[in-house]
Length: 97
Image 1: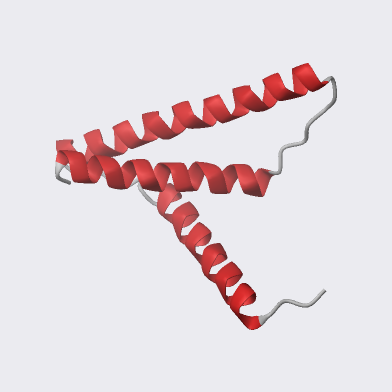
Image 2 (image 1 turned 90 degrees about the vertical axis):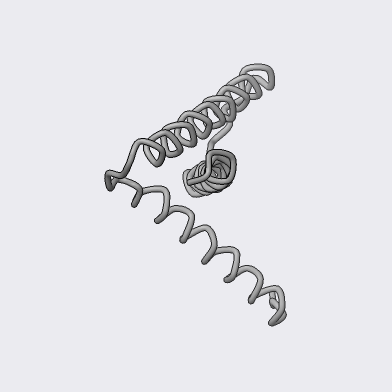
């Protein structure tokens, strides 16, 4: 299996983006003013709701297919990190943080 240079560079760029999203998701523990706490709280609530919905759909799919569906932890973490990053950017734009 051979990758061409463009495909490999896009893959590495996407992997770097995922790494930045994951690190950003775990590094938001510093305290700030009330507006920043509200923005982070709303983004956390939205990403938690999205994660629960994703896992619920996976459980329902496994139930109706009648077989065990294994969830890849890296894909799940990447999905949550992208969801959190997008919701954080949305609430920062909406609430002016």
